[in-house]
Image (cartoon, rainbow, N blue to C red; front, side):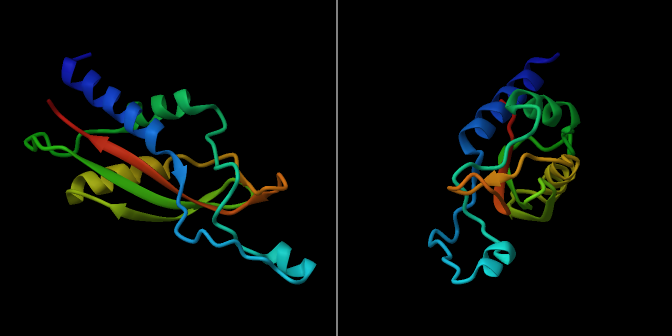
Length: 143
């Protein structure tokens, strides 16, 4: 494996580990009044964030193996942040490019994140699964 590829993979691993936290755009808790509202409530903050079912190392390996450098002539660097929702059953949906740096790289990061079909759902303070928004950074860098 070339030095550049190893360096890109190392940076990807480091930025992923540092940045894998749920998106906390709405920090105020929603306190429902009725039990029915609890079942229908779509919460986005969790005590325990969603996790890849096979562990972080396997997730990073999966991303590393699937990620392709989309523009060979491009010698810059940047991070693409893909936001998505993990529902109560662990299914991801509602993918959005939260931060991009170049269209082809944005689309490549989105393609790879969409390949991850299952997550362990986030848990609320009572240990119950809830829908959670996630941000997954994918860093592209050449040295």
